[in-house]
Length: 254
Length: 186
Image (tube, rainbow over all chains, first blue to last red; front, side):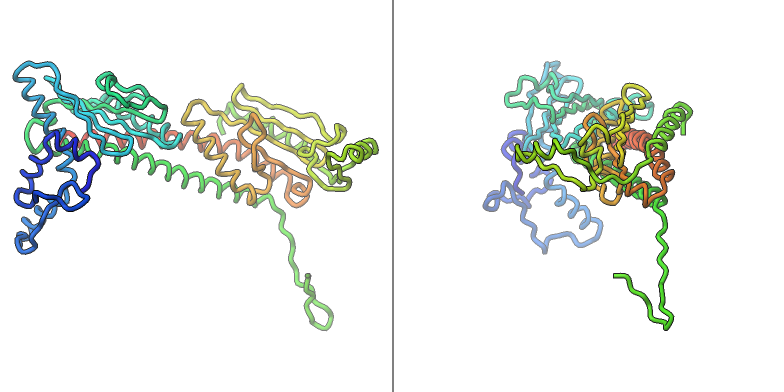
């Protein structure tokens, strides 16, 4: 696997996580031009269906496991801070896309995850604002009281990362902050499902923005067809009758 | 049709019906203009070419008084009649950013299909969102009251459509947020 933020991930303990998940499959020297490689001996793959599926799933989550490093470190730091009563963990930065990054910071009572995301289009930006406003407001509903708190700012970066150099301050960038409380990573299985879910956020958001744009287009297309039908009713019918001569030959209009 | 909209649309309908008395007019040019153009060689003046006068804007005698029917500051209709054509421009209500984007997309969608819409103008008149150009040929080949029907129906439908799209966008956003955040509970 080649991933642009590999060095940052290693700094936050990615290799330990990969060793834990894949053990001996991880080879010491990755392939040329890649950051990390797995070797799978086809003879050694488990044969019974359940174990086989679990194995396939585990290999498929290769990238997810690598990207989980800063989150797991954040959770661990939070537990340490809670116990020792320290103030703030270090701010971890992962530049996983061209101009977008994830920032993770642990505090004694929570873990803060900040996404910076770019909206290329003017329309995307406005749709994104509507969607993210709903994310912020969703907490008012009783069924989602326990979900992480979401905050959103349009161009100014949130307080926690204001001091980071190289931040863009243009109109097309948005910052989304998730506040994860200890109940979201209380035990290992909840923690790992929270991590998987958080990693998908950016793609989930952009997918839904594009989907709603496509829906708008199909609606508009339908409406335009309707209008055309109405307009066609306005056209008068031109009578096209065939004219024949006395001997039976048809007159042709050129 | 909502009650508040009714008098506005009725006014537009009656004005349009009155203004749609168009006749064929091949352009006229007076002598002075011809002399001037020959001397200056700068602009082309043609006689007996059949152009929609409201677009060509040649002489004052062929253009009639333009009329604005406005419901409020943000919604108005401009009717510019002339001897052989009418230009009707509509400014659609756009309360916030979302409506502005939706309205802009919708009118652009329609204007790209102006060929098939016959009476639609490819670019709106400055200050308005969408413009229609109805010439004497249109009023000869199409039933006049049906053209007026179409315009009025368009005005009703466009407002309804924009608010429906905005509602569906908000509903979708709410569902998306809900489903994402509930997944954190399990």
